[in-house]
Length: 96
Image (cartoon, rainbow, N blue to C red; front, side, top):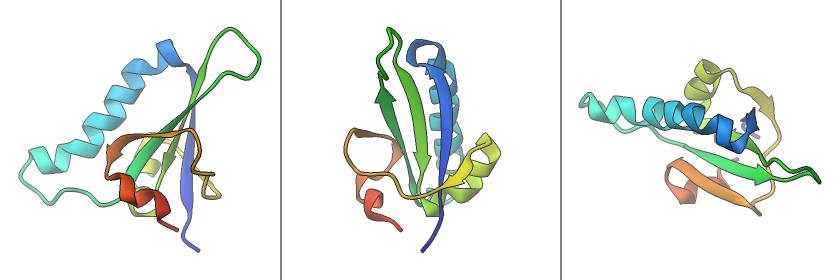
């Protein structure tokens, strides 16, 4: 089984600049005329009984290089529920 990666971010509002950085890093090769990267990045927004919502990013195995550049840690493939596509193609959610 290929390894997914996870990056835990703070409060969803405070995380917005970091989310934009990840989107931009994913898109950078294509904007430079290189092949579009494979894989995808998904976001999960959680409100664990507190006022603030937290964000966790999940990088598919094909996006490992980006995950490492972003400081993400290896993890199991997340459950599909409550995941939103941040960058890439949604069909990559089934990647394992």
